[in-house]
Length: 269
Ligand SMILES: [Zn+2]
Image (cartoon, rainbow, N blue to C red; front, side, top):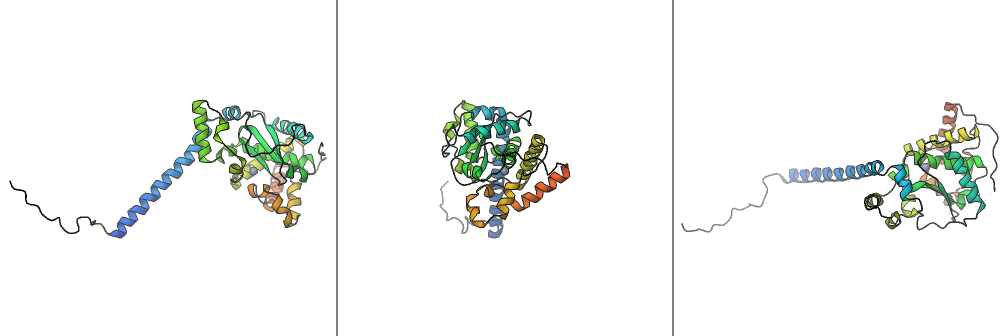
């Protein structure tokens, strides 16, 4: 049989579907794909929390220090005293899987952070501004609350979480993941996470001192202070605004019946 070449029909490449319908399908499809990826990433964090229990996390990060921290001298008296205070506070969290380590970041910007493995960073700027042990105890207790809820792992970037998986799977070193505080400090916690950490922190302060007097006095000073101070308080960008927070803490103390007066303990340095 002889082959007779024929021109294809016009419009063979034109869809019979209306272009708007096609565009709609594309948008819906893409949205579905992005939603799936977003869900998968959220799931990845939950998976990490499950497969990297706090004990394993503590072991992985036992000697770790972020690269961009400038620590003060190991003989600094404040370092010794804060470590003692953290240990005393953590004692009230009986089944804590962490052995908390404190480091002072030699920065004049006030902040406090809960980093993987139980590494609590407080800055020299924060220590310059606290006026009693009770104030410091609440800041530290709040960070313990983040560990309790493992917020610090939820705050890690997905890349870091993947790196963590890799380290666990290969028995490798977390030092190679390259986690810097600059990556971590940018991610604030949700208001719900902050509230939960505040509740845990204030409960610990109450258990330790028998009252919550001056626990949030530092935030009251920040709230009353002039705005030029704010540039020096990056704590406020990663924690709730002082005004709301003070009200929430007062309401919590009243609700729980925790005395708001009592003897204030001076700083030990
Ligand atoms: Zn916090």
